[in-house]
Length: 180
Image (tube, rainbow, N blue to C red; front, side):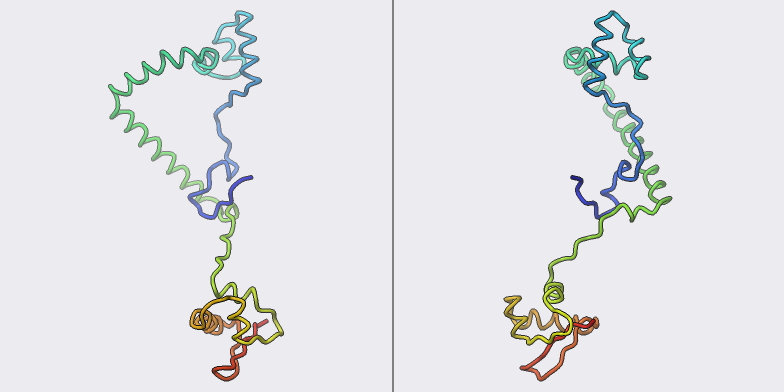
């Protein structure tokens, strides 16, 4: 199950329906490539058949080569060209961010987001407890919330100011009623 996404920065391009252009090497495809290679077909012909690059086919059919040789070559290259690699990575990241920003500016991404869940604050707990057309005493609300008087009293006053409840009665015999 996918996690709900509440904020714009949590969305990926896949969430918006943008397909990844890379081809995935599935286990079935790998078995088929191995069978063709066993029949003495060249790496280039296998690559052309599956619309892949030569390197992709070679490295998937020779994983030991990748582990031994390529890692050594890659480490030497990284040591020599560390600054160039960082600059290329920054440039690619910058291009990706610009494309992503253009895409998000061009669509209504809010329909892909999940609304934030309501926080379980004292005010929300009071509203969930109250039923319309029924008056409640402060003592009933206090017993339900198991909170001190000042905590829920302030929340009730805020709810009254917002127009969600009506407070009536004397100071020590206050009545609370939910507004329809």
